[in-house]
Length: 436
Image 1: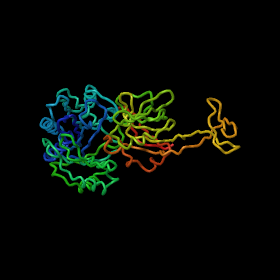
Image 2: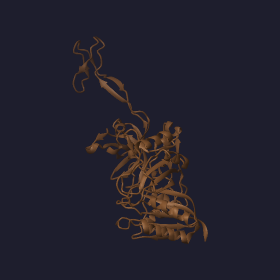
Image 3: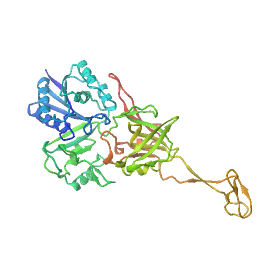
Image 4: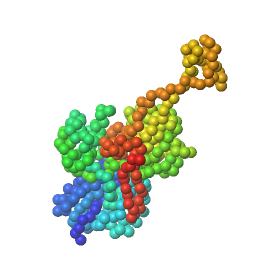
């Protein structure tokens, strides 16, 4: 039968090399060479807190027109040739679905956890063709990828070197900064200017040479024209859920599950404290419940913002909940609490400042003996202003939405909130904002 199908693949890489997105690019080229029409390639990021991920927990999905049986055979052959089967934690999965699948499984895989058994039951229920290798765990990501529907999407152009190549990459540092200068804010996170770092060139042993993220295929290709590098062996533009906050769900302090990522509001309940390694922590409260919030050393200057918080500040925080802490990706300071200072009053009789007369005894003027029980109270200026604050590009997670993608209305609103509603198999998933 000839028609539009979706091919999903996951878990072909390992810490020693390879990359599932590279395999997706190679497969797309081979399908075209065999006469297939490849209409779109998706890069589907899933829950970043999954413990057995290799790097960014990405699956791929290709939308293809042609014979499904032959396409499945080509996909399996590509996996069998390129996947790193020598690694114990590499367990590929291949799925071909000839009709659209419900998005609920994708939503659960990006915001929570799914099992291989659940993936197989989902695929069987909807008549998909699949193959799992070794323990078959890659079927989770592959199933999620073929069911992915993005409420919001960005694009990434990925250039690759030979998959067996090791060692340093040759990418001109100044050309990357030039690409950012020419295309920002339509592309982002190629560099981290605050920390003078190139971000889009990985240091891991995989085929990715560099990646450019942006709002459209045209903009990432425009940025690509500025990059000077060794000659890539293949390039691919993916539509993706990166930079969309698809992993975040509305949360409440005291009711968070390990390994999920939340947006939660609360009031700062402790002064920030800097621990060993430069990590900064503070407590956030909602009624009788509190949670520790963490800004780790790699977040660099973001920690300086966190250090300005005081008890009483009202926040909306975004981050993953792990081992009792919310690991901050960004935060909104909704209200800054006024800081008052107290000191002895000035004597009304002689104009000199009084001194403490002892605990519970008020103040006394040493010059004339006058007494007062009212201190002089003044407001101390706050250097922290209401608004959104985020970690730098070098510390940003793939799924985290950078502030450059927020609209001016979202940034200006005094009480901005995300609305993220969980959905079931037939449910509706909404991602947006409101300002109250």
